[in-house]
Image (cartoon, rainbow, N blue to C red; front, top):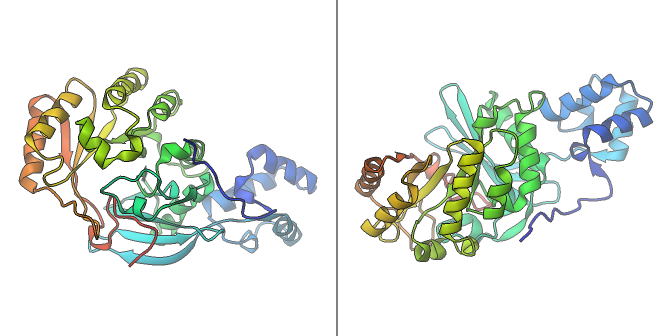
Length: 350
């Protein structure tokens, strides 16, 4: 399955889509000195310029030429909500009219951003609002990057970590996801350490294997939600062709190759995946691995029959995992009061 089918927004290319080599060639064609390349890059990747007129250290004639040849892309804020915990959820419109959501989550002097990799999602997870909105298209690397810059500018503070846990399955948009990660990691662009950049996947096995061969130390999280095949098939139909046995194998390969600790996300759903049998299966799946388990009490989605498990059940799971030597935490969801928590993003604010 390949959903990297970005729409063409017109004849003119987005300046942010040019490679460094293409930008160098363009400046040469326009008779500009080599240092203009660095200036342009600074405006688009660091200063988040919204128009060519913003680029005040470029000659006006050059700005006019660039505006005649290229677009500047970017995102437009349609709406914003602020949570009681300080998190902010944004609905952003892309140049072709598609919309995505992202979330900024401050904590002391740190700022984490949750970004979307696709407009909508085709995976169809039963507990997630995004899938109910349908799939529109995959995002470009710069559209993912622009979400981070938008949140940075709104908080007026440096972004210290990014999680690809918003709308979409990042590994169904692998090339753009990886390109965005590299832009966010680049010291001259996002400047965020690789270990503070986390990709969350439903468990697309071929792409996990591919990801394990990338040279950077990006962090991997896998949405598990059940270690019982029948239950997982119901909850996550989009990855039912990737069996838990094969997922276990590829995650072992990932750890062996990278030496990095992956995370399993496990949303506790009352009466579905919080039973004793489910607990035992999760313990067996994670025992003697390097994995960390994030236990999350399901974030409710309007219209869904699925309900959160109890705090007591979450603690039971935590203790059971500890008994078999598996590190786990009960994660507090940020922004649940504004439907900004995991599984609640749906391409519109209401």
